Image 1: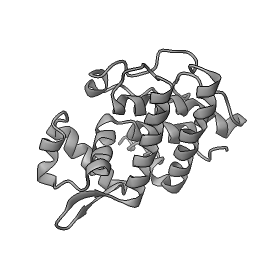
Image 2: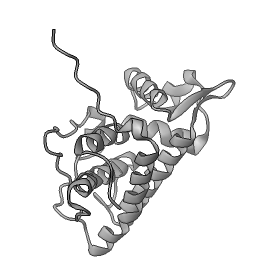
Image 3: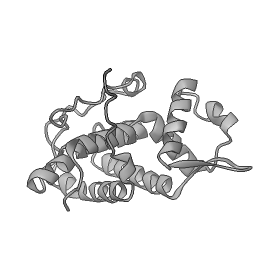
Image 4: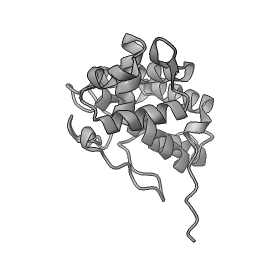
Length: 198
């Protein structure tokens, strides 16, 4: 399955989707239901008020969450599908002990998404490629790890290859889910145009 996205679009989407704070917000709502906005800080105490505000605004702007009257912040259909993608990525990583046998959920998801970037970007140019540890697409700097990213281990996988041929084959499921999710949510891949200099 080839991807209709440029390397910059893939990188832009993964920058958002691999955000630890977005993963935490989406999975918390998916696991436990709507969150009243005033309860966000108490429910997600590991995220600063700035991270919560920025993440909530980004998630609302991209149609992943909405405010439900009387209930609070809830997932949209796109947000629920993203939670399913996160679950599939974490299951793959747990099954294959990637990046390490013991790892936090959001770190597992970030590592799998980062692992998929090169193969998604390569599909557009040359057809399917073999996934390896992530490298930044040409012309686009790698996503800088946030302080929260570093708190639970290395921000990028250190292995050059996947743990096994089985792991490579099994990666097709999260990869397919990611491609389908991106195709259904193309607004997430849009790269913003730089502001003109006066």
